Amino acid sequence: MPNLQALLIFARVAEMLSFTRAAESLGIQKGRVSTVIRGLEREMGAALLHRTTRSVQLTEDGRAFYERARDLLAEAQDVQSMFASSDAPLKGRLRVDMPTELAKTVVIPALPQLLDANPELTLELSSTDRRVDLVQEGFDCVIRLGPIIDDRLVARALGKLRMVNVASPGYLAKYGTPQTLDDLLTQGHRMVHYTPTLGARRDGWEYPEGSGYASLVLPGAMQVNNVQTYHAAGLAGLGLIQAGYSTLAHHIERGDLVEVLPDLRPEPLAAWLVVAHRRNLSPRVRAFMTWVERVLEPYFD
Figure: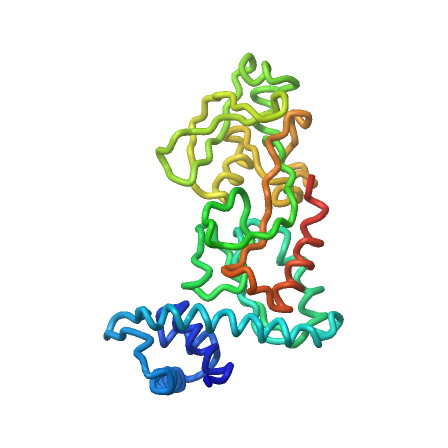
C-alpha cells in the first residue's frame, strides 16, 4: 500500500504534468520525485505516466489512480485537521493568486497582521488579471471577481464588492458634474471603455433599472484591456470610469477622483475564493478565506 507522501508526490506530478515543477512546489529534489514514481509503478504493476523528453501525461491507469489518490489525500487532510487547534499558528506554504489592483490596494497593506500572527506561514502571492490554471500552476486557491465560468472549479462566495462611478476633478471641471442619467447625454460626457480584449464590443455605462441593470451607450476616445490602465485613464481625466470602490478608495479619499451619480452605481461585483477540488480546503486555505473575507468586508455592499 503506497504511503501518503508517495501519493502526494504522484498527485502533484499528475496535476502539474511536470517532474521539475512538482519537485519545486514540494521543495524536494527532482530525483526523489522520479524514484517515488518508479516505485509506485512497480508496486501497482502498471504504468501511471507517459514520459517523453518534453512532456508528462497520465495513462488511463494513471488517471484512475490519481482520482483515488486525490480522495485519499483529502481524507487524510480532513482527519489531520480534526485535531488541529483552530487557534494554532499556520505553518507551511500557501500559494494564492488574485487581481493585481486588489492585491496592491487592499490585501498587501493588511498582510502584516496575518504574517505576524503566523510566523511559520510562507505566502506565495501571484497578482495578475489573467485567469490562472489552479492545477497546472500549483495554486492552493485564487480570488476571482465576477462570474465563475469554469464549472470544474469550486467557488465559495466571499461577498459582493461595491462599484462606483468616478471621474477626475479636471474632467468634471470641463464637462460638468452629472446629477441625472440624462445629464450624461446632454452634457456631452465621455467614458473610458474597458474590455478584456481590444476591439471587442463595448458594454456602455451600466446603471440600475427596475429589478436589474441596463446599459447606456456613451462615446469614448479610449478603449483599454488592463485594469491599471483603466484607472490611470480616469485619473488623467480621459473620461468617466466605473470600478470597484475597494481599489479606488484611496484616490477618492485624496480627492484625485470624485464619485458621481451615487444613486446609480453599477451592479456589485461578486468576489469568490476558488479551489480546484471540493475537498481541497486545508487549514491554511480555510484560515486565509476567513481572513480575506474580513479584510474585504468594509467594501461589500
